[in-house]
Length: 421
Image 1 (cartoon, rainbow, N blue to C red):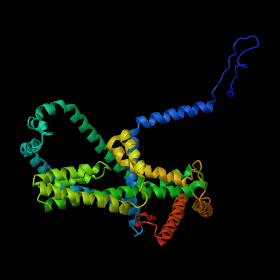
Image 2 (cartoon, rainbow, N blue to C red):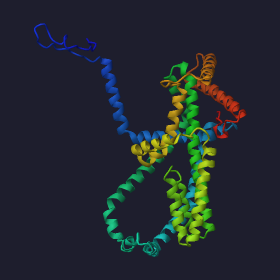
Image 3 (cartoon, one colour):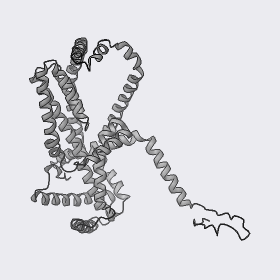
Image 4 (cartoon, rainbow, N blue to C red):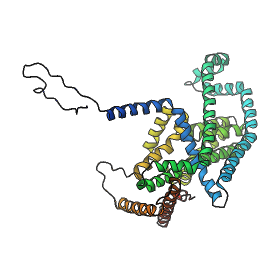
């Protein structure tokens, strides 16, 4: 039998004879199971982190591709064929891009490597012009690549292995997202089956918001990266800079990274333009800086909408946490996950200390109540998968009404409009 822990005072801790009294404190079986479950959960998260990253990446792909599948479904295309068509088009575009760019990029990288001695000598000559950097000129001229390669073989092997792992996890995430979209109804029905029906409307609204956040982030990242790569390519070709395609592709990929991406996109472009003269390098620097400002102040808010406009402190902290947990992949997944957490806090109506109930919160609660009543009436005695479809339909129509009302008042972004299935 378990005993309830109690506070023992000095007077009660001793017997009348002055001898100390032993007090037994026993944990209940339920408390012991709770502690063991928490420890097992922590252990599972630590040891199964790659699996969780693959799952999160697959969910992000589902959120990004599902609007296109829904668009095809609304045009009387069967869901299975629509999913196959979307993945086939995506794979075709990726293969076409690789065929058109990879051979050229490899040739340009080989050309850069062939001109490495001249580039190194030119950099050393610039460094000799200042007494502050002249000491570095001899070090650059006397670089021994043989010794560098010998000392970095382990690092290169580790980096290559890590790169193959990332590719394998990426392929696994693509296949997992494909099967998740095929089995959408059963997976969604299973999720709704374990949640009380009184919370189905809120759950469906959360799922719609997650799709908006995650899908918008993926599509927005792809769009802005393509724009950045195209701009760098056009700029370098106009300035007569060699190896423009390789530099543009590298800059487009590095545009994925917040904060440090600006240095990794501008740096190689300006250095490559320096070979055409300081004036060309200055033009490239000025135009790249202007485009970075245009992207951060106009394109990013326009493409991502309101869903990912996070405070700078949240963005910075999320990047630190994501990088510490899963490296570069974690940094890429950090922002949509942070936006999803903030959305969950808002949707679950978590009341913070000292927070007062706002009129819009009361209106939201009343709308939730009406939606739940309609859902209970329409989904009575239905299986979980059919009830889930009705809940998503009710939440989607309500979100469309909210978007329309906000658009009338001029506070909605077109990118925030939900995709209804």
